[in-house]
Amino acid sequence: DGGITQSPKYLFRKEGQNVTLSCEQNLNHDAMYWYRQDPGQGLRLIYYSQIVNDFQKGDIAEGYSVSREKKESFPLTVTSAQKNPTAFYLCASVRETQYFGPGTRLLVL
Amino acid sequence: AQSVTQLDSQVPVFEEAPVELRCNYSSSVSVYLFWYVQYPNQGLQLLLKYLSGSTLVKGINGFEAEFNKSQTSFHLRKPSVHISDTAEYFCAVSGGGTSYGKLTFGQGTILTVHP
Image 1: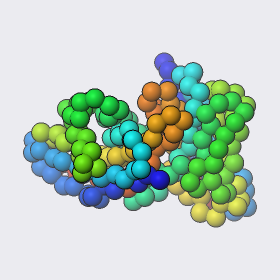
Image 2: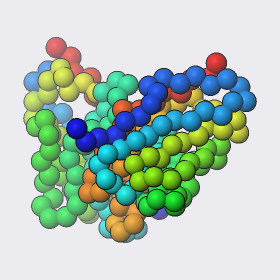
Image 3: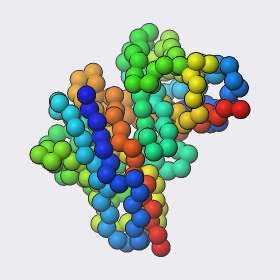
């Protein structure tokens, strides 16, 4: 079955800690995206990558980092610099249409 | 720059009634338009998209939308809703070329279908 997987489903972060959200796709798509979803604000673009070893900042990149070492993987790290990380994080990949993963909910302890 | 405004944050409706979810956009370039549905704690599923051609677009689950360039709108409609249509709906826009995959979303409309 082709698709996008995100793990974990729930993630807890302690103050001052960096955490990494996983995103994997087996759709052979070149482009991948990370969005953050907050209630009443829709989705906002954090980072995107259109090809391996290259990525660009989106609208709200501060406090986040990414890597794209493999075509199928695009992990997102939420750093301690992100002061309000509690949100639902969605990964997507695109060729003709954007396909979304099931999401990771990040909570702060 | 692009922006999307969904004119209603919540829409309550009775089962088997028609529904319209409104979406307006602004953009200085040609756009592609999308409607997505999200069920609680899940990812987004594409309902339909407008890329070019006929301005009336039919999607899954009986939904359709009409692209109106002069009014910069892309309203979503369904003639008869079911309880299972209860979800949050997002309108989104993207540009062409390398910007195609970068979506700008509206704030979302929560559709609640009552029996």
